Image (cartoon, rainbow, N blue to C red):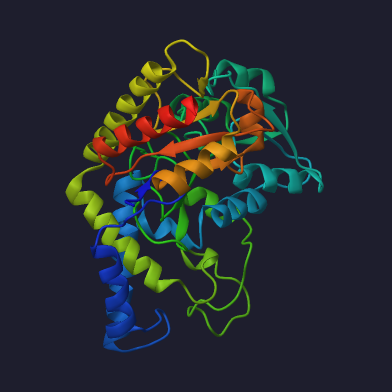
Length: 387
């Protein structure tokens, strides 16, 4: 049985061949740490790390590639930004479409005196920027928000939110887990102060590597979450106050950075516009097929926006009258179609969409998916709903 992978919103698969090749070369031909060894191989690895920062800086519209810190993943990045910046007595604004990578740090910080307001989004996941005005308080210091929902794919208006933050003197932190490498993001033009990214989704890199870009004037205002060896200022026991060393303690995931370096080069050559157009083309075909499949019967409920406008390449749905977990199981067991079912680590988003606590089945499309796979999934759903 041929397998079909529709879980790209969780992690993209497969990766460009250049990614595992680069990781293998690092492991077999380099293997050195950086900032420690004073020899040629170590310097070569440093060049790869530096070039990766440059590629990320160009992709995300940063001002200086040294203001990029690598982490294990976007969750660690968001924890550093939020816990390092917010202090007891501060207030922060977020949306009701957030992933737990945002919500759990905020709930944890609330125990220490940080308050937050969750601005309610529409039942299609859309956010009205005007609603942020009502959430403002004298002690509001920041807005933190996802660029796109990992549940329904709806894009949030981060450019308009960035203008709002600039107008009111607020810091703006963005989670681009679902859009990095697919949708254009310019943190300078969008007034983003801290942009958290992960390598293993739209950037097409391996798991275990992520990071964040930060404005230079914010560096000293964020207390590092971790501290330890950096290879710099080794004669001092205090944390360095300069980037990227301020937030990069301990041994880095250099195989992961080597893989990310290769994936970013692939994206640069292929073009994120081509990737986005392909994914949205598949999404349009799937949405049209679902409308035909349902035929007005109400057996299917598609979450989020009806069309492609402000929607990423994922579709979540409920099979009314049929258990979604059973449908997802049968898609995999009988047809080899891999999806993600449940609450997607985003209970707040599901409450907004009216799908809590049941959840939904998510189909998320990537560069290597093809129209024939979309048709196969639609035929499989048709058989399961009739059965």
